[in-house]
Amino acid sequence: MTEDTIAAVATALGEGSIAVVRVSGPEAVERIAPLFRSKTDLREAKTHTVNYGWIVDPADGAVVDEVLVTVMKGPRSFTAEDVVEISTHGGIVAVQSVLELVLRSGVRMAEPGEFTKRAFLNGRIDLAQAEAVIDLIRSKSNRAFQVARRQSEGALSKKIVPLRRQLIELLAHVEVNIDYPEHDVAEMTASAITETCGKVLEAVRGLLKTAAEGKILREGIVTAIVGRPNAGKSSLLNALAQDNKAIVTDIPGTTRDIVEESVSLSGIPLRLLDTAGIRETSDVVERIGVERSRGALNEADLILLVLNHNEPLHEDERRLLEELEGRPVIVVVNKIDLPGRLELDEVRSRFEAERIVEISAKEGTGIEALERAVSMLFFGGSIESEDLTYVSNARHISLLHAAAKSLQDAMGAAKEGIPIDLIQIDIAAAWEQLGEIVGDSVGESLLDQIFSQFCLGK
Image (tube, rainbow, N blue to C red; front, side, top):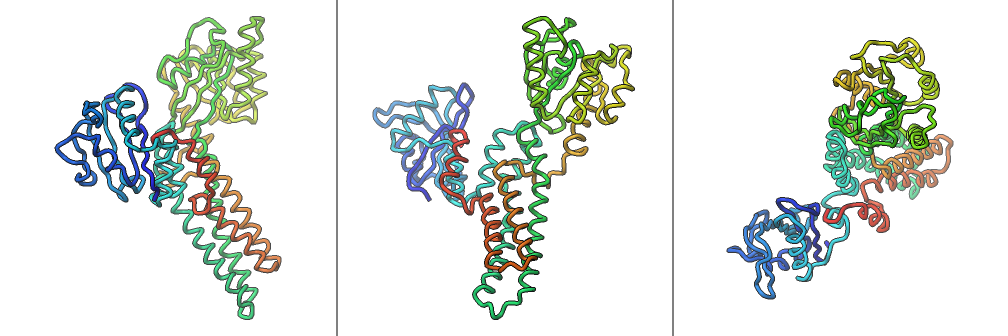
């Protein structure tokens, strides 16, 4: 347990109906009690109760705000310490006035992520669960939120802990054989190493298989909408965003810079980039927009190539079709509500049928087919059921790769008959690398780096 008491605003700054000032530490109740005027002395309040009253300045008794104060005594709180949450009226003045009084009472201002850090240090959650908290806050879709929620409940930890247990039991077996070599049967030890490491390696690889999908759910797919002017790129963005985010006209070259919007398609977060129409042009400003479009094209995880169903295939589009072969592309044939003049056979000769979607962005038809195409491209048709643990954190992915290599090295060494005291080093490394995921073996500097990414008050 920590010895000092901290405070911070736990809600976003700005106007709102309420705001919350959170206080945590061994003196949380003791420090706030003199500031709280009510029928109930806060020091006598039962845990997990909400108490009505006023925050007053003890210097002159002036009322600062009418509040509700929640008391949660440790260890039954998020930080496993005594926690007091003051619900004030929303607005910068009210919140700052209450916070200033709290800090003047001898409470220290919390650092970013310090409440969650205390929950970790006090054993309330492990490090993987703590890191999931920031993913909950930053979730870009309902599916990403559900994945982060499961992580915060310990879904990944429940898979890592048994693997570490298997490795520590193997290390104990190896240690006994090192200390008492006269009782060792080399073949049995080598077999035990190969079998146990093999099982753990298979499980680690299973987690790594979800890494690409997990990263997508966590960070979203950078999606460039490209095509010739007037193909309907901005209309597609508006249809996906279900809002008029981009200007749509019949005048070619209306979009001259990149318009960005975040959307969710069937639970898959997309960061849409509506680009300027790609064509040869003498207009200096439009040419800059075309260059930016090509830059977005190179950086995109997904490319939506929009073709006009009402016009023959242009030479610019033929070059794009050729250029984009082998890339993660979905060809969107737009304006199917108009007579067809597009040579679809030429398009089909370059891309599989599931990569070609016909829509009318104007009328909103075909959008579901586009959603299915995106899901098929990145998730093989559908996102797995909720019980699947997605690994999405870059630090976790790196440690899982490192653990897999250590396990492979241990198995290879066992097959080659290398002395077990050397093999033990690789097994111990895998055990420690998996431990870093849940925070069993992690340095203070890494903890500071992780929690510094959190917002103040969380």
